Every structure is written in structure tokens, then in C-alpha cells.
Image 1 (cartoon, rainbow, N blue to C red):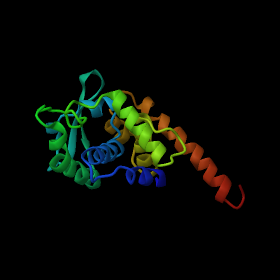
Image 2 (tube, one colour):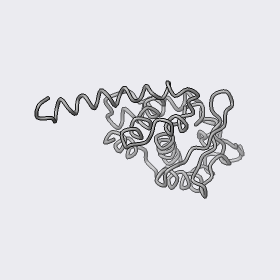
Image 3 (cartoon, rainbow, N blue to C red):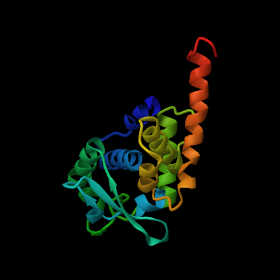
Image 4 (tube, helix red, strand yellow):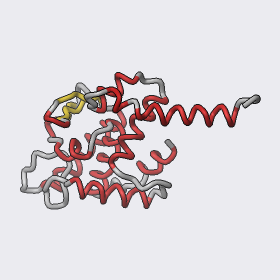
Length: 183
């Protein structure tokens, strides 16, 4: 979690692309979206009043993903201050656009994440899936139930979500080994 905080402190929100990147990182971590889902988001998919994002996932399945207030605040700031400058005359419907007003591509997002991960000094290379994994793991560590995390991630099968519980089990073993007097 400390690494997430360092990551979120890396973009420069005083520039349009920096504010876009900050909003992108916040939304990625706050929602657990797949990179393709994030790239395909349209402005109208964000509902600030209901605090949700409408996502079209694998197989065209739609789901509603709640978004926390911090991510939503940065997203609204991006929509008002930076996105209009980036979109220019292109009139793009996409939420996240490049300097020419074109939608960010999956490869472009991968490059952004890798660069910000390096700048933040993260131990592991930052990828879209690392943020998705952090989202799921932090929810489960915080007490969220597996079924809720499954729905948020858009997994058709709960066994896909159960992968994240293995990470938790290894951490539980480590906690006992390190902190229990009779381990």
C-alpha cells in the first residue's frame, strides 16, 4: 500500500497529461479494471452522482463498478480541467485520450504504467494486471468477501478470483512465522 501511495504521488497534476495520468492511476487502482476496459471507457460511462463506472467487460458483459470518493474527485478534476485541452477539436467520446485527442491504446497505457512505476521506485514492474491484482488483494485483506471481489473484477467463475486468496494464505503463514511466539 505504501508503494501505491508513492505511485499516486508521481504524476504532475499541473499539466493536462499529468492530471490525466493521475486520474487513470486512481481509477485503475480504485476499480480493478482490465486495461481494455479502461481504454474503452467513454465519458458517459462515469456517473459521479451514483459514484459508479459502467464497464463493458469480456464477452461484451456489462457491469457497474463503484468508485471511491478519492478516485472520483481526481476523475472529475481531470474531466473539467485537463480532458477538454487534450480532446481539442477531436470530440472524442473516450474518457482517456492522448495529446491529439485520440483514445489511449492498451500499449500506451502499458508504457505509461511502466514509466510511472520506475519513477515511483516500485520493486516490481508496474503493469495493468499488477494494479488489478493489488485492487483485489487489498480488498480481500481488508475483509471483503470473495463473491463481491468476483463481481467487481468481472470474473465469470469464482475459481479465477480464488487465485487472490492464495496470496493471502502465504501472507498469513508469514505473519504467524514472524509474529507468533511459538511459531
